[in-house]
Image (cartoon, rainbow, N blue to C red; front, side, top):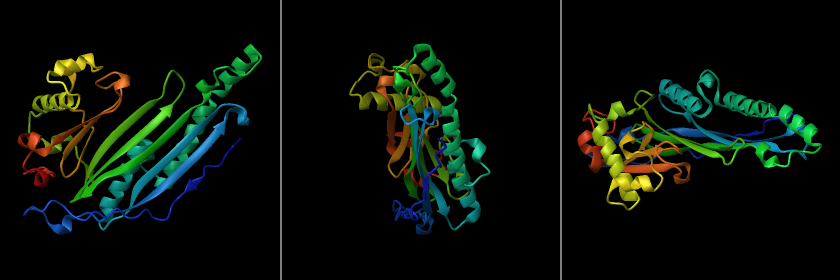
Length: 284
């Protein structure tokens, strides 16, 4: 069954207009962001061999992207960044709607590759596979705006999926864009030289505090791997209060621990922040 991709473009999402920054002398009120966003939603399902009695794959995807901004050159950069981070680098030269179409089509085509195995197993056993759930794939993906003030735009891309096996998986990737030039900020843009070791210790201490242990080594009895190997991973977002790092499943702990978000208030990392960094006005 060749189901068409059903794309619903809701009337322009209420523009995410953020109304204010921390009132510090260095902040210009004109620096408040004024970006409008739109969205594309896809809900698609495909049954193996086009038979509705067979297992199926399900794709649910909601993509939010910048649709209007005063600086059109920056807007183009933002749009490309949102598209690339959600769909992959090979979508850099297409529109968001085209990228969603290709994404949904590839998901279905990849799933169809299971059909030969499904047919073979059915012929061998004389009946459909008993573990049909192992063929029932799904993916749910979305992105979310987390902070949109003072020339800074933080957002995250999340995905939940199942592709056979004992359990599914999750992934969360954060991004911070600087609206003065449309570029993504990385750790080296924020922190002073040789920050890694100090920041690592602060992250480990915060994880220990969140888990209510006084000795960080106790974390290794709670599913965490070697705490001496926990380092900043560049997967962070910023807001008015601080920086939040995200560590995904298996990154620093066993799967059952799940996603780990580590919030670091600015007062804890102030000594590591570059005074000329794009977030300095939030820190000092």
